[in-house]
Image (cartoon, rainbow, N blue to C red; front, side, top):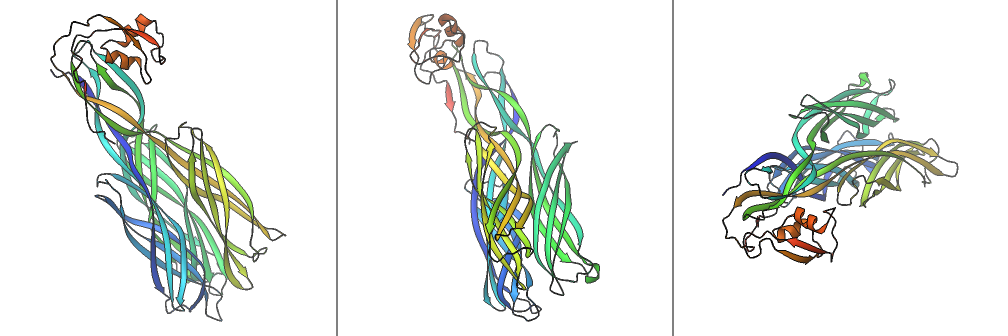
Length: 525
């Protein structure tokens, strides 16, 4: 006989796998005829764009480019510095076992290092290492049993689970444009380097929409026609709306940004300005925090019940924490003197994350690239400052996934009399934590006819508690009930029994004990 039940549908989101892979892209660049020969490179940097991401069976294809800027020492009596802009295109197939095209893939790409080698005066080789951090999520609709309706003599074990149920997801493209004005007396010759960073990320939820906001900080170093170096900075707001049905302002929303394209172009000389345009793809995934009361196990002392069991995994306890830290240290670069620093590239590199039940420790280093002037020549030197940031683990377990972003909020450098450079860097650390929880789902409950076994009916036995026992397990084993066992043994807290404790068990064994209670289905992970 089929047991009548009531069910509800829930949507779960689970982390399937994560992968980190470093790929190298390279190209040989020919110096345009309009530029002088290259003697030596001074600095190379780039900004990464991902303009296409395709999820396929067993792999993800990523297409993009690195917008690269090279500062070099020219073979020319008239110039002591020139710049070269080029694109490093890439198309990578990253193998991910068990990936299917309906899964959600989040990719964060970061340039780990770049190097440039002069092959001859008119040709250079440029190489970049890109680190892809990939996370794969699966969205599933699951039916769970709420109530069992037409069976009165049944013992039910329920368990509360706090989980983050999926509401929906969406994405949009955001275009941010602006014109940055340079000094009126500067005749711009060429752009030497461009630094792009996203800051002040925020969101607001209302009326089935997510408003994603961020600021794009732009810093451009340029060369003038009379061989002077100038710098212009700007902040461009980026705002986009994402439609997600049934989202409420108390829900959780995860936002990921990817730069798809950028255009940095000098305007006509008489305008003394630089045109900037960026295209961002913004992906939002919304969750609702819910407490689910699941039927985790069941049996009947008087009926022969069969059912199926399976395990599902869902994300839970998503949290976002941010903190600011100021790092102070001194570095020594002999060639750098007071007032000759032109620019300092600051890039935090997170090398390791240590997780305990109480703390999360972020370990890494800050890479500093000093660009400076020395005897009418431009040069660069690299320094590193290690850091270790200790943060509270509010999840109180080390079984969590941590996604971390480090960014520079402010920086200050002071060349001191002893030749050292005092570095003061204000850095922000944004961490997103979550954990997978495993839930036992019961379904297809049926009553199977069986012969009664009257021999042990209403008898009493003595049982010694074994390791791993609970009152529920003991009651189910002997077709008794937790209520009866606790009552006859005077147990006040049913969750507390001790190994070796003697318990009297009233047995209600109406049916043969060789029946099968549950059919285990393959675990769904």
